[in-house]
Amino acid sequence: MIKLTTDLRETAIAIAQEAGQAIMQVYADGFDVQIKDDNSPVTAADLAANQVIELGLRQLTPDLPILSEESAQVGWEQRRHWGAYWLVDPLDGTREFVKRNGRAGLGVVLAPVTGIVWHAMRGELAYRRQGLHDTVLRTRTPATAPLRVAASRSHRSPETEALLARMGRIETIAQGSSLKFCRIAEGGLDVYPRLGPTSEWDTAAGQCVLHAAGGAVLSAATGKPFRYNRRETLLNGDFIALGDTSLPWRDWLSD
Image: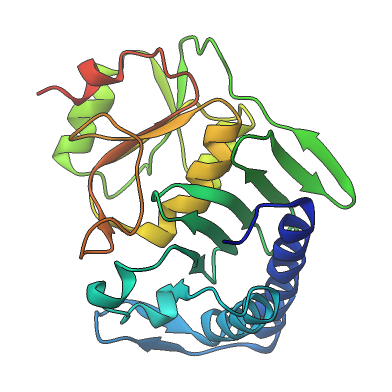
């Protein structure tokens, strides 16, 4: 079994940074968008980042499988026997080392444009790295009104609108992808409700960082933290991400 070590974390961060450079090079050169079989878009940036990440991870841990958004055709009959694996979202710059128990033990999230990295290992603190400097992350606790909520100002479902109304006095802030979890981890946001499908690679790294900073990502159905590679489907159910876990989130989710 691979041990979680500082060297493993630093190498994973370096791989993320190299992938970020590949993404920015594609953006600088211009790119086309293709449509995959599931009708989701894929660009040369996705593919370039995925190639860098998979090559780096195979060199780092040759015996560990890799599950990427760009290689998600690995079936459950194969995945169910994995003791540990890497879970990758190449364009978001996220990767996680997931253990047999389904928990993300190491999470790295990179913002390619700024180069900022959020990272954490289970049982240790969460950090925000800018340049060579690491800052310890802690969620905003207690979170007081107005709560800062990650929610798009457009394309909200009626269910999401009703949930936001039950939250009382809030300030909605638009924030992309895995960065929502990182912004909660560093205290810039308080809550991220998601009523709608996401994939496991969309949440695992951010959940690892947020958990290490004092928050949680909880299933709306069970109230328990997300676990990974426990089912045939790679889709998540509805969830809520919190910086302050004492907030009355169950009341918000109730009809």
